[in-house]
Image 1 (cartoon, rainbow, N blue to C red):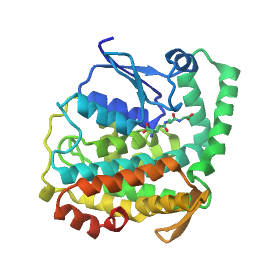
Image 2 (cartoon, helix red, strand yellow; image 1 turned 45 degrees about the vertical axis):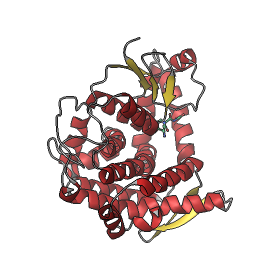
Image 3 (cartoon, rainbow, N blue to C red; image 1 turned 90 degrees about the vertical axis):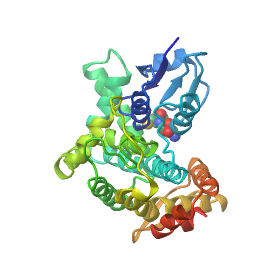
Image 4 (cartoon, rainbow, N blue to C red; image 1 turned 90 degrees about the horizontal axis):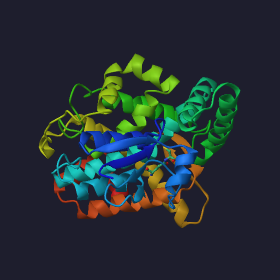
Length: 329
Ligand SMILES: N[C@@H](CCC(=O)N[C@@H](CS)C(=O)NCC(=O)O)C(=O)O
């Protein structure tokens, strides 16, 4: 085997993110749509999630898109997606984490909230991951996945109570991205970073699911196009901006992160520490509730420890101004 192999699903935001990264980095890889038979055949012992990256030299299998992206950084120096400036590198970790853990609530909400989206999404997932199914058999398998995924909504905070916060956040996020989305422009320069790919993964699936696709096409067509192009950015040869030339959208995304994601992460960590199964927090004037998540406690600890080693008073000043610093120090 001389190429990477990426096992994933077209409807999976983290699979889209990894595929986008591999394309940009010009790393030779094969995309393999996961199916139950392939899953059984590759015998991966870790958590049963996608994407799974298989290494060319020994066939070993690895999961979790952030560590995977960082592993690729260790293995290949060309076309890095981590900005050279360490302060901007930290910001790209922070925004990527927010996209992976918070924007994904938007993805899950829009995918499974309305009947029309449930029908489309369930059918699409089964059509991708179960070869040979047609007609009634496909409809039955789609119904089973629809019920499973709708049943999971409260676990990730996609409840009627939280719906206004999630939807309001989606519109705010799109408005921020709309301030800069144009050809060959990304958050930290004219080349994409880890943060762009984190956002891309979630937005790519939002941009193909029915209701959010209509919202994006009708309200922010430039963002829709930006997402569409980032799917394969292997032809992009750009530069990083300097910290002083950082675009305003980064500040706006940090304010967004300080308004929604970081208070949520802090409440989740406090609830987990107190042994509570559920967290409750005021976000942008509304009460948000969901079960506590161990994985997101780790995300919070990781961001706080990354900041300890990130240099620069400029970085701390920016995090203070944007309402992030108190959560991270
Ligand atoms: N933190 C992981 C999350 C991966 C993840 O949650 N993948 C979803 C699909 S997007 C999954 O495989 N879920 C298991 C399931 O649906 O059964 C990453 O960044 O790769």
